[in-house]
Length: 169
Ligand code: DAT
Ligand code: MG
Image (cartoon, rainbow, N blue to C red; front, side, top):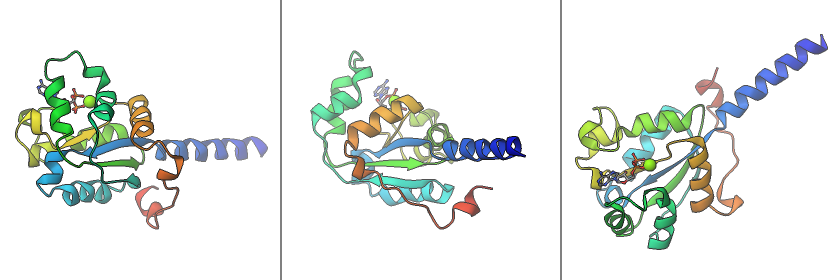
């Protein structure tokens, strides 16, 4: 009996932990300038993911150099930082089961020319240097990016959406 209960609770805990995976999504300056913030948020909301943090900021080059530190040796890096710091952006944290991987699928390929129709980049943009949205590529990078853009714990809101039992079985 106790074993069954323990197995049940560990099963619930596992499911809860999975459902609480987080990713960092950001509407880039071109997405903001083109009025696509609502469209992008709409897709993550409609999918069933939970919004945990969101802000509207004009990021500094220093922050972007940290955000894209892994790409600092690439030839497009200076142009990337210039583009990303050219206007306000909308950084967000979304939570849910497999949200990192599913989020990347929703974004589409890095180069919109290779992004399938139905994806955000496939539907809404044309060139790699103006690909309107960022999404973390792994749980580890998501955690780093969330800490970089939302350094205060209070920025991440703990709440339970009313529809949770209609999104997860
Ligand atoms: P992603 O944004 O899909 O994670 P990434 O991390 O490889 O792609 O690169 C970060 C951003 O840098 C990408 O969204 C657009 C830009 N970028 C990548 N490759 C590029 C290239 N070959 N030329 C110009 N910009 C590029
Ligand atoms: Mg990336």
